[in-house]
Length: 363
Ligand SMILES: [Zn+2]
Image (cartoon, rainbow, N blue to C red; front, side, top):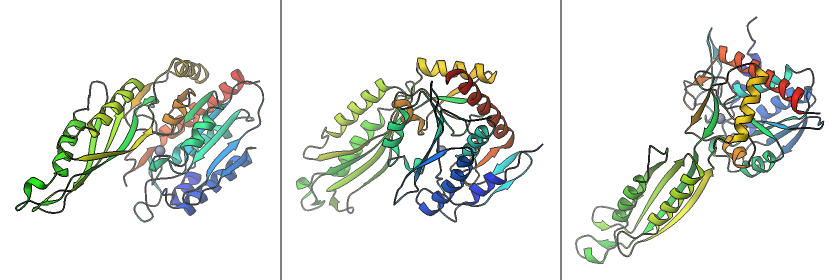
């Protein structure tokens, strides 16, 4: 029998852009109803500027504990991409794979259990803008769990995500000295020229072989053609695949920012790590093996360049796997869609994992 997507439709038809607190909270309320029906207790982390973060806890027996992690927000401001549509193969709509589809996979897998214990759920409201508000809570909560499963979209062949790059976002404010470019050229200190030197030096930190990239995505500075520029600004990000690479690239960034290529310029660095790197670990490999056993399926894995809240739980030391949502494409665009077949497969896989976990690892 075909799966009925009406609950997913209801979630998708509510706009839950990160800054639309009212909409995010309405989605949260819908999910809360569904989980409380399964016996969950809800703890609300109330927020004024964003939607509330919601922590759902189940009855505990002895043994291990698992956290299922997701986010309620999407990247689409009201009016930019709205509504739900489906055909034979696909479901379309804002957040259908990132990650309202993932949240419905989670809910359906929980519904498939005879009873639920030792499996909790945490849903945040600000993942799409970098989880600045929820990060500390996610990090602290994660430490209470033995395993964490994250419900971002699956890979094309149902891949589970074992690694994600770490990301830092940085700002460099460069100060020079203004002067008339004709009358007093030599009295000026050129902040734009300094910005150009720094931009090149920063870009050269990119090492594709090691998976390190530094992208100066925005540059601004100066006043006009006839004035030596008194100030300039660079905005850039760095991504890296290991903690060793992280430490190295952070050190090199600091060095470049604090070197004055144009004598007399001054530069300030701000910003910092946004998501720490999610690395493959032996504990994670063990979890993966258990999952293969519980599900009776060969699990394919992949590493991704983009970050998610899995980076946070992994950096808290909790064995984490990501990508339990359905496969889709076009996420963060108006072409976002999720495959029905993969949605149904993910529900089946996750159901088996949760059942296997409770039967084998809890009291
Ligand atoms: Zn997401």
